[in-house]
Structure formats: structure tokens, C-alpha cells
Image 1 (cartoon, protein in one colour):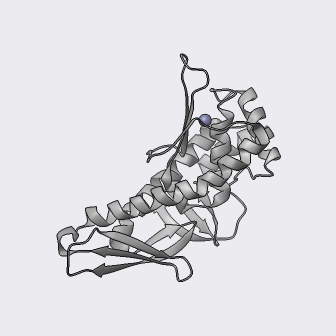
Image 2 (tube, helix red, strand yellow; image 1 turned 135 degrees about the vertical axis):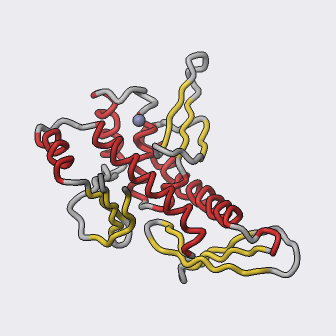
Amino acid sequence: MNITLYRLAPLEFIVVVPRNYFLKFRGYVEKNIFCEEFTAFFEKMIVKAGLNAHVSAANTDSILFLAQDYKVKRTLLPKVIRPYYKVDKEQKVFEIYYTKDCDNEGFFEGVIKLFYEHEIEQLTLPFVAKYYQYTGLKPTELKFKYFKNCYGKACKKKQDPSYFKITVNPILAQYNLALLESTYIHELAHHEEMNHSKKFYEVYYHYLALGNAQDVCVKDYPCQIMYKIK
Ligand SMILES: [Zn+2]
């Protein structure tokens, strides 16, 4: 099956699935039933595309940050210093400093991953504060970790009812803030309900409304092509 992922100008994206699949999913949508299978399927494909994108970024000399292209500029330094990067958000340049010792794709990929990890934290913290204000809830632990098939995770402990951990996938730094916000709200709603039950979605939509946030929907946009997935 061919799935095409389009990037929307400049901050959103859309996934296109073949017609026979679409009809199957549309059946659910028309009956107004929230289709978890549909969502899970999309999320998996988008994350897969994102992971592929950032892996190949080391080769293609451009990376995505908040759905915009950043040119990767490599600067070779003569002396051994700590390899690092600098980001020029105005010029959309992501500059990596390196020495001969670290001139390999694994190194460049590692630096890009670090960049996303750092950025996703800075982008997520305002949402933590925002939804703490609206709901009185925030995670006791906030982590950032790459997952292959989800944007975020929520975790509770039976022995410790006050414990609530949210983990956010740094890959979200490639997409838009609306997607990050709805992901954070999704995980926060798991504080009330761990399963994806009807009650869970009531909580989720309630929080969305409190924050005047968008339930990110991937259709009906004019767009430019981003990646093709087979
Ligand atoms: Zn969930």
C-alpha cells in the first residue's frame, strides 16, 4: 500500500491513503464513531515518516523543525572541542560543528536527535503550565524519549497514586505546535482514565475546550509533498 504524507504550508501536514482504505475509514467517520484504529494507523505512519526523515536528514543536508526546513551547515573545526550545534531561527540554518574525529553519519544523526530533544522540552513546558492552570493537573515526571509508534505515553503507579509520568516523543518538534498540544492533552487526560474509553475522550475534549486547542485533523488542506512511504 502507498501512503503519501504531505507537509502543509508551513505548519501542518496531511496523510493520503489509497481510496479503498479511505472508504473503509470513511464508514466509521460518517457514523460519527471515533475510530481509534484509524488514528493509531495514521499516527504510526506519520511517526515512521518522521523517523525516516530525521535519519535521512543527516544525508540530505536539511532538517525539519516546526514543519519548516532548516539547512544543515557543517563546520569542520581544526581543534578538538566539544562537538555542538547552533540554530539560526531567522535564517533557518542548523549549523553543526565537528572535528575530523566525528565525521560520520552516526555523529550528525546524534546531534540532530539532541537538537529535537532539547527543543521539544522548551516547546512542551508552556503547555504543562497552561494546562496546570486550567485543570490543576501536571505530571510529576515529564520525560522526552523517541518511540517508534507513538507520540506520547502516560504512566501511573498503583502503589503511588500521586505519581503520574508523561513522556513526549521529540519527533513532534518536526511538526506543528497544535499537534504537540493535542498530544500533551491526550496524555494528560490519561490521568483521569488510562484506557481510550468514551470517558477518556470526554475528558480529552473537555481539556481541549478549556485550552481552546485544536483536535488535530489531517484533511482538507492544500499542501506540498513531504515524503512517500511504501
Ligand atoms: Zn492514549
